[in-house]
Length: 467
Image 1 (tube, one colour):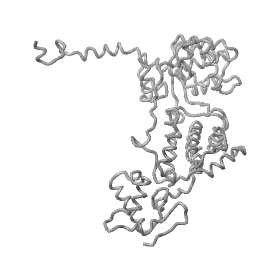
Image 2: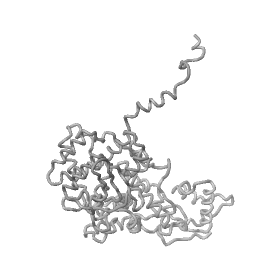
Image 3: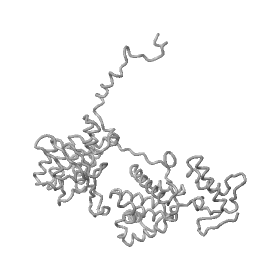
Image 4: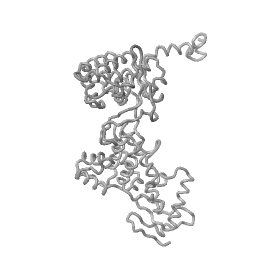
């Protein structure tokens, strides 16, 4: 067999040394390449698939086809886009995905791709400050809206990264996969989110034929995703005494104290998410003179920053989480909250069409405003040991407190899930450790049915009982 050559620096011919032996065994060079690169176990899920893959290697060797020195595979097996760098492919992915995902997802994607890109460089960018390198990637390269606005110093960094980014074929090697997974280590919840995003990116690479298969390990093989707990920390829940003290202190603040008090009360009594409460309009609140009312929740306004929204606004108008576009959620309003909201509307002379909780300048209530006021209230009201504890540390804990109160007082989980805008499985897994106060009643229910007739059995063998 005549040895073939390749003009590419990354390929080489196995030539006559790879002639198929009379016995049909795999040529030694192919065995060495397969063993060195680990391609057999990676790409073969069954014995039949392994035999089929082995046959293709033998055919390629018999034909004198060049083999890729990085992967140990015939060049004909290489993905059509394998010559593209990871950095350029990541840019393509961002541009494809930009209009299809929310602003929050854009931010998460940029953060994840930044970590991966830094892990897939030929060398460390030691000539630049680490914070500048990360900002160049996160805020400009992986932000389609701002990429062309990058200042000269960041353009220089990105040019260096493009020149030093590894090819997509680097994913064929386990050492690079391990480096990426190590590089995305962080808090468990963040690491899990980054890994999920990376998996989507690599699946897209497979569809675009930039990769033969998704190289991320699955199941119990390789590095497993970090375990996370989605349950609410019971220590973060507030009791009525604490809530009353916090709301009273807030109400005494000048100018906007009464408005913030009504906002916090809505989270505590109705269990809304903050981004849902800031989006409420006056007409969304049905507030009778006496008794229970209701809130008609249909929009959320998460705060993500103008650099990531299409219109440059700090907030992004979204449909309700987990609901179809245009769907509305009806939430009951406690009589105490009815009175608070009626007083707010009358005092500020709010009209239908206007926001129920407008900011001081008339726009949406800023997250920085209600978070800062809440932090000051905690510091002013709570005893030192409670202030240093997780109790009510986030404004969101008012929602957790509300949902837990509903569950602990016998409201069926399906109903709580409907009011809260969650699925029942998510609701139960999130608040499983917070449901209390029902043990005695539950024990009473099963005590009788589990009782055995006659005298309770004694421990020991029959012979011992006869003594």
